[in-house]
Amino acid sequence: MFNTKRRYLANGPRAIALLLAGALLGCAPAAPAGEAPAVPESYFEYEYEKVFDYYVIQAWRGLDDPVPAYTPKMVARHTELVGKLPWVSPTASADENMVLGRTPGWPKNPDWPGDPEIPSLPMYGYQITDPDVEGEKVKVVLSAQNHSTEFTGSWVLEGMVNFLAGSDPRAMFLRREAVFYVYPDVNPEGRYQAVHRIDLEAAPDPNAGTNMRKRGNPQLYAAGERDHNRVWTTRGRFATVDTITAAMKKDTGGRADYFWDMHGPQEPPNWRSPLLEARINDYAVALMKREPDVLRCGPPGSFKRNVAGGPPGKMSLWAASAEGLSATYPYVYEPGGWTRQRLIDAGRNLALALHDVLAAE
Image (cartoon, rainbow, N blue to C red; front, side):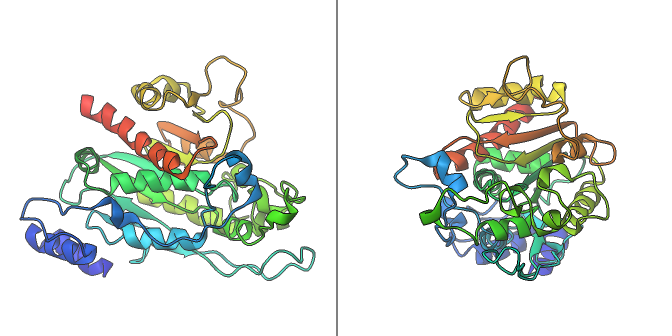
């Protein structure tokens, strides 16, 4: 399916590509030649299980409808949906199903009888851009699920992807001007583990923060590491990290303009960057206008003062380094105790802020 789609886009008439897109979407009739097919918002809806985790629910106490966990199965379903659109394709490192590789999997650990056996899981990579527009484009890398129970970042990423892949004229503009490299699950085994040990009757989880469930995965735990966001500068120790970093470097050519690592939840909600320029540039100004209720970290103050340094091995520090992606503007996003819709809107705002900047140039 993916190979056929790319072949028509590369070599066939635009009208044929649009007919194929209409068939894939199963929605409105194919658009006339020269026009993009309409993508209704309902297109991005898919079935997901309302699985909850105590660590996340803490941020939503009092809400009538708590935000559910974001499982590896949901990553697969959303990736498959988005991948049917004619402006979405696998990255250079991925196969036709947008799979970069698979995790090694882990047997059941007798020391932790409540932990499940973890199967080999796929790692995904895809890109969103207008295939009919050639030439140099702004490179934007999007990632989520670095920390295994920070499900909020995954909802933010989904909101950003849905907007970028939709029919809004501003999204169409962004697809012409930029290419978005999306890595929706950079810690599949950690996330699988996190959503398979949920017991609200026993909450709070007495093991939260003491084993691999909160921030790590079995590979890290076996190596004596606790935090998945402290090992991105390692080589040869963690199979998933090696696969993701190699893919990002190959896919982007080793350079990115913007880089987002989605986390959360935090109070107050915030975003930050290890680089001063990224905290005061035009994009930062545009983002503060789009989300005035979200704190910018880094300028003098008492909150998140270590944004420029902190523990080594953070993903944003790796992305900013020459050994990583030499990212000009690397960012971390930590949403607050929000509803699912507010998280989706946050992702949309991250994209709209970029539109505001590029459209003004």
